[in-house]
Image 1: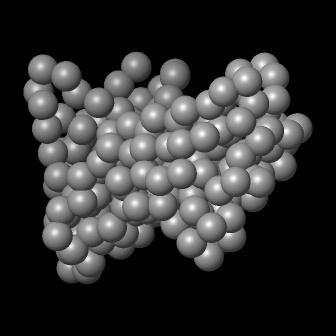
Image 2 (image 1 turned 180 degrees about the vertical axis):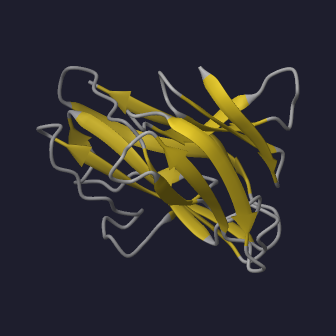
Length: 186
């Protein structure tokens, strides 16, 4: 049950209340299809919220909860409508259910000026332990968004994962990852 809503920078709303996820951040850039950005469960409920943004772009929310031992809490938000200078994303495992050879990958993404988007891949025989490497089979190299061949001698196993590395030197611009295609054969 909502108890408070506040608009913050970057076309975001913060909704607080009780039941479900009690602190939610919602992107309302597209009014017809708002999307969840993040949230927090506060089992005792959230009764009120206020938000501030520092000059350097850091965002903070101050919430009042129903927890007698911690009625007032501070939530450190992200860069407040700006992009972080770097980030990573690790995929879920692709598991065909048998050992296979992963032959080639290709990426689709956008890299506006001042941004980079690179990746590493990992193949695991047990689907538990992964070591991410680039095209030469070492952890010090990276695939570009244009893709490349997986290194021979490394590409056989059961499960496949990829890890993306996103960077920007302009807080108003970010690289965008669209998809990855992986070719494998039995």
